[in-house]
Image (cartoon, rainbow, N blue to C red; front, side, top):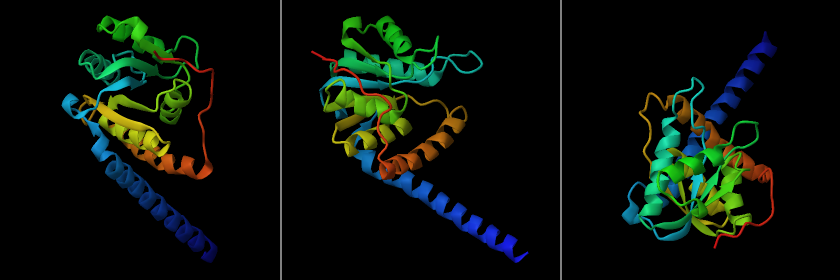
Length: 213
């Protein structure tokens, strides 16, 4: 019985530390990214490039993914406003018949962005990969990230910790009920940011340099 009590209390302590770590991670990222993310174009600098972060075009039930289409609208709006001259579309292309960068490019072209102004990053498997590859592969030391606010905060924080002058343009979010699962997952993803820092996690793939004129 004493052993079971000891195990229980150790587990309770570990759980408490984990919860505190998650709260601290979220507070840290919110506080340090606050001045660099916005939904207002007028508050953004002019940059050579925007970085559009990927997500699936459709949900598991086949319905359109509002996160995806809201990001496309925001990226097209950013380009048409003259705030960026080019857009890197960065996402997952690890499975057959699943190609986030290609889907984003196709939708951006439909929205009026010229195809020759869109550059595809097929190895943006994680936010960490996308922000670092925009610098190391595409040669961009400053850029505007396009995603929903909760995602932009983490992406901008990551980018700036890797020496990139990043800003975030917030796409419209989905309603709080539709986004409940996504927002809960984001809390854990923010804790993982610091776990990755501790263990020096790097992007999964490098690659040849891609020149953006």
